[in-house]
Image (cartoon, rainbow, N blue to C red):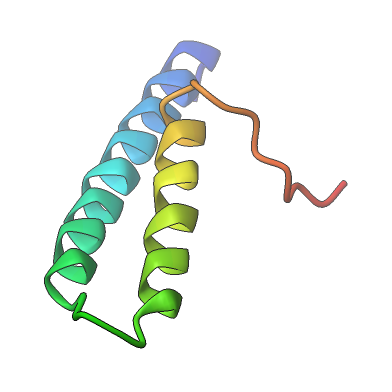
Length: 65
């Protein structure tokens, strides 16, 4: 597989990940109630940061090297 194909495949995989994460974020927002939902807000925030990373807008701080 050539480098161009690998880059395209990674781009495609990242786009699929973004779509799935955005669907999850929308779902978690439906679970928010008036109280005791801090864990849901934390999850949403974490997933939003992951989407920003996959979209190239933010560096991901959790890489293992």
